[in-house]
Figure 1 (cartoon, rainbow, N blue to C red):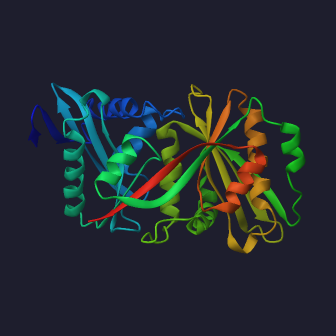
Figure 2 (tube, rainbow, N blue to C red):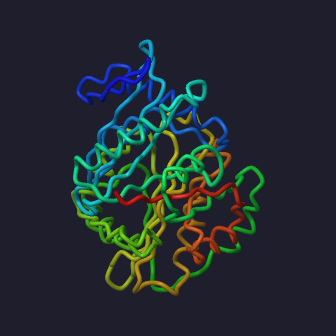
Figure 3 (cartoon, rainbow, N blue to C red):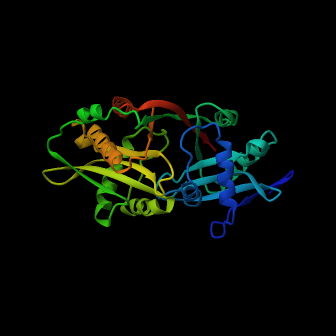
Length: 329
């Protein structure tokens, strides 16, 4: 597809050449006003080329004079929510904006989603800025607002965190570094089902966290170049999995950020302060093992009052807000 001097073309994931790298460079350049951690190329490539566990993807770029000047990637769930297409990124290099390329890419993405039978589009942008203005101008409406918070480990009150760690009877903690072994996959699948209680778009059904899906997630960790620190809680009486938390760090240790992953406590085990126990315990362990990590960043829906209270009690401070947008097509 051609328009003016640029051409929209698909990325062949079997022979991507430099197109994924070009899209990544455009992504980084297009998000220059975001002062949070910069996603690594391995992480970006994995999301673009797979759509994440439980789905598939496709990606298109706009090339001008042999250089990628913009593009987008679609995540297409297959294990659940097969009516949904997630627009993972749609970006135009700053120097190429104002020429209609963003609009052309957006319309092209909608055409591709319709071809796949998808009827709901979701995407995310910062709360303010060009991305939010672009989404609103194209008829997208707000689905969910998430707040990012950070904890500066260089100034954290570690003694206070230790005092804050609750004593919880009837449960024991288990922890490991790296992907989960085969013997833990069923427990993780059970625990991840607790994430279905987190706020989500009204038209999104509960995710199907099968053992195969969890296995794919774990196998992807070395590919995306991140090492997880994982802690789970088990009921002492029968060993039943009760709660889970995870922090990830870059495998090459080139980044001083830690990325707080999912935290959940299954419904029948709530009310014992397991969430606080897990998050503080895992953070203290991370700090001991990875002293180069300076800050940890976390995401939560602003309507998730319980988790926000935990984060604020631990000293996480507001960083910014992100919007999830929706459009029915």
